[in-house]
Amino acid sequence: MNIHAKQHSYFAKDGLIAVGLSWLLVSMIGALPFYFSQEIPNYIDCFFETVSGFTTTGSSILNDVESLSYGLLFWRSFTHWIGDMGVLVFILALLPKSNERTMHVMRAEVPGPTIGKLVPRLKKSAMILYSLYMALSIIEVVFLLFGGMPLFDALVNTFGTAGTGGFAIKNLSIGFYDNAYFEAVITVFMLLFGINFNLYYFLLIKDFKQVYKDEEMRVYLGIVFISILCIMINIYPMYTSIGESLRYGSFQVASIITTTGYSSADFNLWPTFSKAILLSLMVIGASAGSTGGGVKVSRILIVFKKIKLDIQRLLHPQQVSAITLNHRLVEEETVNQIMSFFCCYIMIFCVCVLIVAMDNFDVETTITSVLACLSNIGPGLGLCGPMGNFSMFSDISKLVLSAAMLIGRLEIYPIIIFLTPLLQKPKFRKKQVAD
Image (cartoon, rainbow, N blue to C red):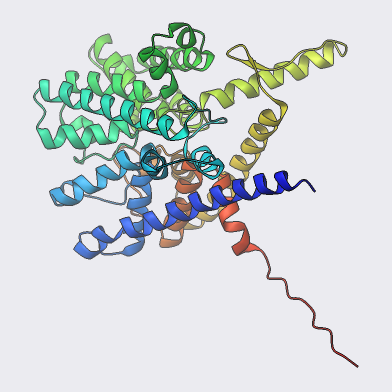
């Protein structure tokens, strides 16, 4: 076997295991402030809340969020902000130099089917990503302060928006403020954080052509526009004006497709058609290379192009064609990885649903609770909807849902590779006994 191939495989496995182990340890340690304060007395609940924070899911076991101290509320929301771009990507930005191992760490940390460097040096790429992330966060805080939101609220709500996590500091989430300006600002920034951060870099260097020709961004914005229009029309009879239905519909679409999970209204009460759209958006998620979760728009795009290509090959066997994205050829290996990702996603989803179903809650609650955690969204439907929480689940279900959040945030493979040695049967060598 080629020595270089062995080395490359080792580096890849090394990086993926490091990421899986790091996220597990960070979550276990991050749960300690909740546990030591005894504001959340059960450690499994503390772990669930912390995993939800670092993975930017936003699912919560708290019945009364407002009862938490300001210190823990800040820490709870800050886990979104630091966990979103990836704890290890932040470390990469501080490393004195990078190598092939760090590239595999970056690949595991940054969501999406591919990871490319903005500039030749990986360290500089990480620093650019964090600079853009911080700049957008500061701008949002300024806009919220301008509208009259208290500084503490502006900071923690920005942490949730930037991290597309959705931990609110009020029991009614953003609906507590009942302020159209706040909702408009947060809606815009949720959508901005759901776009591939590479495009902001291209804007900075005035490479507008790269931004314009990005297929994923166009499809992402198209899905948002169509979803808002459909939901606005569908929920119009529930509200006093078309403007009000647009306000609530656009906020919720932005919140769900970016997997933020904030709510300004109880969408659990909306018509089935609107809830079905939101359920679809939970699966789709945001753009690759963004701070959002879900399957990612680029993967959906490539799968549809793969289906179209297969149909064309059936109709015209002699035709030579290939899958492209942004006018670039998508390698067959990447397409195969995406198809494997979907298979793994479905299998993990089914297994988690079967385990959580043992708690004997209704089907809507059971299915959407797993989907909300696996896609890092936050609220589901039913008992775990925007006005509910995850406190009623058993400890076993909470651990399964915590695992789903980690698997979803790291996009399956790092956690599977990390757990594989633990699940394998130990191999014992037979001792040769001399006659």
